[in-house]
Amino acid sequence: MHIATDTRSRIIAAAKPRFHSRSYANVGIQEICESAGVQKGSFYHFFPSKRDLVMAVIDEFADEWAHGFVAEAFDPALPPMERIDYLVDAAYFWQKSIKQVHGRMLGCIFGNLTLEVSTQDDILRAKLLAIFSRAKSRFKATLEEAVVAGTISPLDADLTAEAMLAYLEGVILLAKSQNDPEVIYRLGPAIKTLRVETAA
Amino acid sequence: MHIATDTRSRIIAAAKPRFHSRSYANVGIQEICESAGVQKGSFYHFFPSKRDLVMAVIDEFADEWAHGFVAEAFDPALPPMERIDYLVDAAYFWQKSIKQVHGRMLGCIFGNLTLEVSTQDDILRAKLLAIFSRAKSRFKATLEEAVVAGTISPLDADLTAEAMLAYLEGVILLAKSQNDPEVIYRLGPAIKTLRVETAA
DNA sequence: ATACTAGTTGACCGGCCAGTCAAATGCAAG
DNA sequence: CTTGCATTTGACTGGCCGGTCAACTAGTAT
Image (cartoon, rainbow over all chains, first blue to last red; front, side):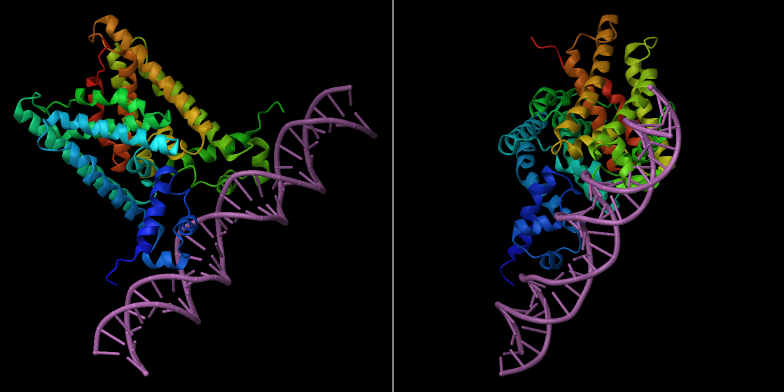
């Protein structure tokens, strides 16, 4: 099997936009199979369960971001605090373009899934947590660099990073409630005002 | 029917913790009926649809908060910025007590439902939006008062209020991803550092 | 007593849910 | 040519989904 079976890929490709635009519980395996032109039994040959599929979808989204906007935003050539602006802008433009195509603001799939499933499935929660954890590390490293560069005054980089991530997710949530990406545009830049001071 | 039928109330009482701790799609009417000791047909006598039930549940949660913690927090006797601290504390203690009883952090039901259903049901989205809108107004009035009192320097009260609400929701989201209310405790106080300056 | 209505009952609808299975297919290595 | 494995097929399971319905009960108002 030198040629990586495209069946698996087609399943994931069919599942991605559905989980993103609806919800975990609202998307059925049957529908995914029909859309991917795959039989039920074939699906279960590649994925032991629905949960395994959504984990693969999460990975794909994470990779897509990591190699796309995130890589661009956290470009070491950029002054540290500008990287944060860049990331917020990227979130804005991405949501905006999705809305133009799809008619709706879909928000962040990691946030969406977290609120839906994390009380019901600890394995999925752990997966999502790991994603947030990596995002936080990016913010943290950037903040530390900014402190060293003297761009911002010293602060608790770990907690401030977490606060910024929380803010970004919250802004996207509110934007989704208004079905309007412009909320991200208006509220996003305030992310840089967030600060947690270092403990005494 | 002088005695307000308790059937309706029992249905809502059975639905509340379920929608809060799981999700809209994951809770069935059958289960709610069984738990409330009510027949299916009786359910549909009081609620035209599942959506109407969840709207009633949203209203109950909103009232509970409005007459509980929110009323306490936005007490005019408190210095304005302390009201915001109070509200964040209330969110923390509430989530913490839920976790002690239930074993899990359930988060904010408005945020949970927003991310789950707002791409699929504009009526529910509008309902949730109205809740957020009221919350934002509370923040805004408080900020305006703080500016007048000279506690904080002048800012864009409308956008800062929205930013604070976003931050609170984001912090709760992150806390839920870690199943740990202490996240709210650690990150919450930074809400007061958020600022959107007035436009030129 | 009668008529009306709010409330209740429980069976029923078509359809979808996640997941299983035994049998068939196709391909590759010996 | 044969063995063996990856892949695919499509029917099938038991159970739940939201919602409907006609019949029944009970209380109230005239």
